[in-house]
Amino acid sequence: MSKHITLLSVVLAAQLLLVAVVNLTGEDYETFKAEDLLLSIDTQTVDGIRMEDGTDSVVLHRQEGQWRLPEHGNSPANSHRVELLLNSLAGLKKGWPVAKTRGAAQRFNVDEKQFKQKLILLSGGHTEVILYFGSSPGFRKVYVRQGHEEEVFAVEFDTSTMAVKTEDWIDKEILILKEDDVEPADEGN
Image 1 (tube, rainbow, N blue to C red):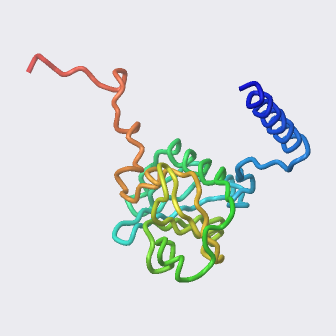
Image 2: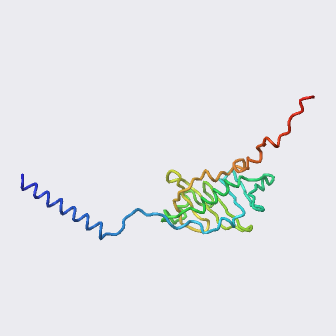
Image 3: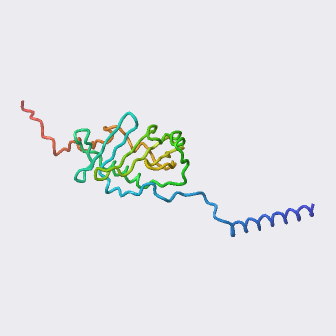
């Protein structure tokens, strides 16, 4: 029995030595972390946004520092929501491409003709970026492809921030009456 304990102790010591050597001299095998930004655009220069899903679409336009809905009587848009969207887009980090072929773009629903959502950012009336958002590989993740590139990336992004219904972008704060704005009713009639 003593012979087996000695043998097992030597094997354990060898394993511990091997673990120490691998950890001290080996390469860093951490999981890949995306660091490169997907978009290289200054969101402050963006003055137009178009979003569509194949059936519905919405257009937002910045006029004199205020976001508006030009196709809805130039109504004010919820600027806070627009800025949240732009900041989310500016923070998208791309990792390794998950695909690079036209067939893969169709499979992941990020093709020009077959997409879940399409987003166009405009600056000075010119198209700066076209993004095709496709199917989802996981919770709050989505496949995305830039219009001029072949690579498809899986990014962390909540596509619910890109609603394509005009009602979702109207600034509802302008509809709230303040107590000071309401005139008392004439009760003497």
